[in-house]
Length: 365
Image 1 (cartoon, rainbow, N blue to C red):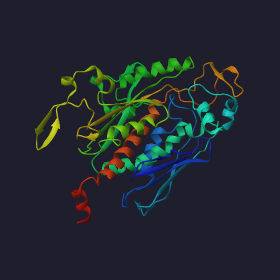
Image 2 (cartoon, rainbow, N blue to C red):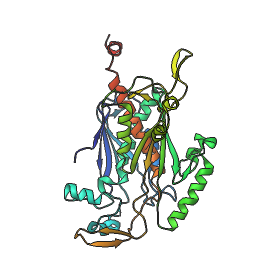
Image 3 (cartoon, rainbow, N blue to C red):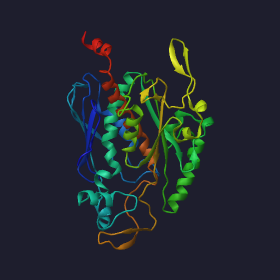
C-alpha cells in the first residue's frame, strides 16, 4: 500500500488497522533535544478518543500511547520516533455481515476495486482510527511549534446549518462542551439538533476552522509546494473531509478586486495587512498574518436507517448497518485538523531553512 508517508524533512509514516493489534506512527526527521514524554502526546490523543460523549461512538478505548524509540532521558535523540497505541476493544463480529456488501458512503467498494480484497472489520486503513498516528505525530510537531511561538488552534465552526455566532465567539468555551464549539449557545442548539437526528437514525456534517498564529512571513514554495496547497492536501487527506478553504475561500469569488485585496501598511517596525481576506498567504507563501483554514466534513456514513446498496454478487439489497458509530465526526476531527496543519507547517519551516544562503550561514558559520 503506497501513500502512508507524509512530509519532506519532518516525515511521518502511519500504520495499523481499526481492528488489528494496534495503530502507530514512525516520525523521521525530528531534531534532537526536544523535551518529550508520553503525557505530551496523550493529551492530544485524549481529545480524539471514542466514548467520551453522546456524540461519539460508544467504542471504549483508552488509546494509551507508548514511545518505543527515539527518546532518551526525556529528550528526542534525532533518530526515528516510534509511537504505538494498542487496540483494546475490537468487536469484529459487529462487522462480519458487511463482508458481503458495500456500505454507502464508505470505501468498501473502492478498496475492493483497487486491491481485490478488503479488511471489512471497521474499515481497516480507511477507518477513523487511522488518525491516531496523525494525532500522535502532530502532538510532537505542535510541541516544537509552541517552542517557536507558533500556535495551531482548531474548533468546530458549524454543524449542519448551525454556525458559531461571531459576536459570541469565545475560544475558552471550546473545551467546555463535547462539540468543541467556541460558542456555548450554538453548541446547545447543535446538541438538540444532533439528538433529533439520532432518534431518526441519521447523522450530520459540519466545518472545522483552524487558526495558525505566529508563523513568520516567507514560509512556503511558490509553485507546486505552496503553503496553502500543502495545507489543502494535508486536510483533505483526512478521511471525512470533502472541501478545503483558506481565508475568504469560496466567498472570495463573489468579491471585486478592491474588496478582496488586503492593503499593506508599515507600523511599529513591520509590514502588515489591514485585512486578511487571503487567509495569511500570498503566492503560496506566508505573509505574516494569521493562517485561517477550514475543512468541510461530511456526515457520518454509518447511519441506523435503511439504505440501498449492492452485494458482492451484484444483487440490489437493502441494509441496516450495525456496530458502534459516531453520529457526527466533526468534534473528534478538530484535533486531527490541528495535527495535520502542525505537521505541514513544521515540515515547510524546516524545508525553508535552506532557501536563503544567510540562513545556512547562521548554522554553519
